[in-house]
Length: 208
Length: 204
Ligand SMILES: [Zn+2]
View 1 (cartoon, rainbow over the protein chains, first blue to last red):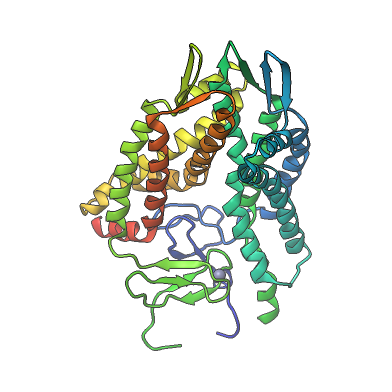
View 2 (spheres, chains in turn purple, yellow):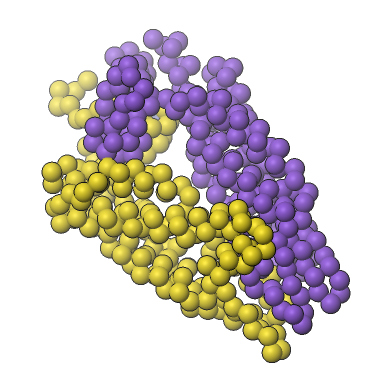
């Protein structure tokens, strides 16, 4: 065996469910003989699917940040909050550490995740050979942090349920919350569709 | 290559085919090309996952039966549980958001726990439950969507925001969700799909 060899070259595939290595036939409908999870040497249509989810998420990213995620009506009148103004509110009211947490989870992570996925998809499409290890780590990071963007959805949900004080204030959810939730779900699908093994396939072919 | 051949494994992140090293107890094997975790040798991983999972299920019930937090101002007192919060979103015509909250904090973690216990309990007793493959498939599909740890952080952020507005009364479920988050993390960390399937295979 010379140089690195991928399992796919030997017509073998690892099961995503139980980790068993087994032979993949020519047929598409192969399943893991042990746990029954469908086997794919590579995720099907990985790049096309990843792009579709990236584009959809990027489009919804605009209303997610511009539309209000909640509306507060109090004795002093009505006020609309976007994701950003929520961060500013926390900052001004002295909770700068929480402001930072929400800023990272709600604004930085979704944007960084989209940029990272674009870099990954483009690099695989252009058969790039640079830094495969760093790109694999980038992918793992994207998978790890993506879920934390749900933070604001939960905060809005709890505030809407609790702030129903007739005497003082009531909070209603805004349509930005819907767009924001969609962005989180779509970027998660994008990350799930991407196959990090494609990063290494280019290197494989030249060594062979 | 050596004469004593350990089994071949392929890395799930870079697909490198390699021999699996013999692991000491508590050892972790990493891919030699990309560093992804190939396998772990944690003794009695299924028993530990089962114990943590049973504890998590108990806390899950408590966390959803009691209010998370209450808000009091003058004569007004409002409190909410997780399901109540999702219902409030639903009533405000945010059905998809309500469904998303419910799916990620209630349905997915519950399904994950029930599927784990369904597989682990018989496996630890040396049996194979019926439809193990189907349940395991459901488990792997539902796993990425449970987001209890994010929800707990969401509760904390809400508490800080609410503290500016009125006096906040922490409920029983607040602590339960904190404990549930830790137990779910311990369950996932202990669970080893390979160990489970080795046991299920042996039980056949
Ligand atoms: Zn690897």
